[in-house]
Image (spheres, rainbow, N blue to C red):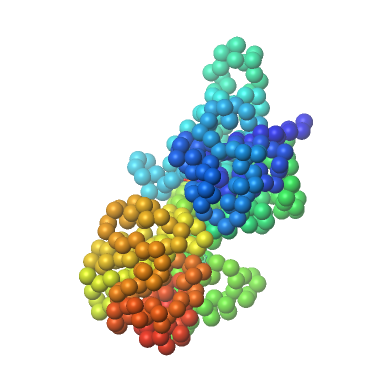
Length: 463
Ligand code: UDX
Ligand code: UDX
């Protein structure tokens, strides 16, 4: 049997759902793609005529939205009808770490997944393929299946006669990185599809074949697919913690992290990517997914495995605290009443996302020590920074020059392109003396900064 997909619904119009469905719509003009969300503001932002108001900033995204929106890509709050019309439904809702109760602090909170499964069970008509896009704990598919199938038993005879409901569950984890999401979606390293039902797997695979070569489509069992997503993120995060651990040794010994990264990355077995030291990894996935892996390992009595992965997070937290200690020590042991310019608040360049951004902890710590912060980020809104800093006082500035007026030090926290070519003399002349430049991303030209008069500290390279 060949399952033909004409109408897709994606539940969750976030950083994953929005860009993913924009690429689906653009690559498959014959498909109707509905993206639904319970959040009305989010949907109205996706439908805003002014493309600068889209809720997600991603290079290339606004072009796709303009091309497909209201042609074969629709954003709405009409969850019920969009589910009813769909042959295939993607679940792309958030799965945060549980804050309370059993497994709190580690396990993922699956309440939204359960909620979506119940909605799908209620409103879907006929055969429906349900695809897990959200990162989920291994074995979640069986829970979704249970919820969906239990709904079939509850139906009245009349309903059963009217429609022949049937569900197939697939895992199709997302590997896009924010800031390069569109490119990652259009040119993926691989597409992973896990599932038991061959026809359903083939139906999803057929959609991807519109732009992804078949050799890049990997079909696995559902548990392998779910686990691969968690472990991919854990491996990537582990590289960041490994290089950050090395950065601390570099600063003590006089080695230079850039040279060390280059030297180790040239070994083809290691590879050169993900070897930039910085203020630690942020983003919605790495910490959450490692915690989920830790929880899973402990659940199966594998405490050695759990402790191994937990260390990746501990090192990440330590990197943030040692950077703030460094700033404090450099400014004569006190920053009370001193002004600092924070350049960059997003967790990485080319995104307006601040979830788990290292800037949050570092800024909170600096504020706690009495520092007055001028924060500048090219894409993050003031209201978002206010929320992240629990409405503590700070100055929101609109450009680099405004941020550095009369400050004692500049702290670079995000690797935005514009921070790579600073006008050091101009900045130095606007600041209090002595003027410090703390480069937590290794993006500045240290020699030029020193020549301009700055006292400089660079992560993995020191003063
Ligand atoms: C989310 C998960 O956090 C991640 O683990 C997964 O891999 C992909 O989905 P993201 O898209 O970045 O990532 O989350 P977010 O931007 O918070 O978007 C989720 C959206 O789902 C929100 O807009 C929320 O309103 C919506 N949602 C949530 C629903 O529409 N229905 C619900 O029941 C719950
Ligand atoms: C990650 C995964 O890369 C992606 O495959 C998955 O689907 C979601 O999680 P994302 O969090 O968007 O993507 O960004 P990523 O580029 O992986 O960066 C994560 C964090 O690590 C950022 O804070 C980044 O600045 C940091 N990082 C990355 C480093 O500090 N050094 C590096 O060399 C690379």
